[in-house]
Image 1 (cartoon, rainbow, N blue to C red):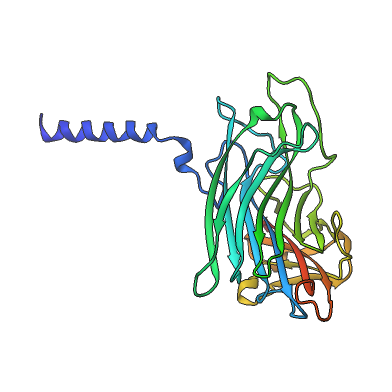
Image 2: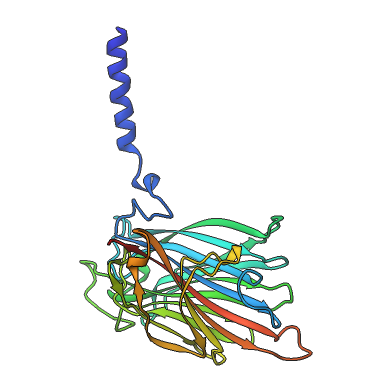
Length: 316
């Protein structure tokens, strides 16, 4: 075989190999490209802050983020599977251990479906106390017996250095519409996005952005006025303060642009003049604090915080 023919054969073989690469090999877990349906990278966080320290850089953070088809319809594989790639971040978590990762995309209604639950052992020993892990889960959607709007909930159960329980939880909406399913059950009546921070003895501190918020995230220009909510969740202590930020970097002690801040809960519109922002991607971060000072009790003396981080895109 001549060198020219050999080169043509090799090129053709390489093209065949590329065609055989599964779609999952071309997935970008952070930009959300390559998934079967439109997705957006949503992140829930929970913070614990000891004593009277101001929450932020010195707090203990758990982040759980994933590309999710918020407000969209799932497109399972022929075998009924969908893939989720979770990014878990620990910040300032010396002595903390993440021991159980659980979640589901079919909550709640028909059986409160928990699609996965299993042991993990996440402990951060990095000198700067920041560690990142990726965990992939494939969920069998056949376990979800009805179509309609379902809520996704994902939590990393963690034991603190003082032996207390701590976790974050999501509340994200997606849809099922399968030809072989006739029953429809909607858990929520809107496509909101919620993050929950939970600490033993404090209950839930919730942060939410109200509809419309759909994957791949809002494209905005001029003045954008999203509706947000920061308030206690189930069994939660009263909210002591709240804040709304654009592009913060709390691990570096940077609050970003603060567009709302005050005592107690908040439920209403925030005004964002996107003309003061660069075109391109940005991050909106909602923070809910519940502080309880108990003199003489170093376990129930501090602040539980729920944090929601969602992207938006400026196109002026």
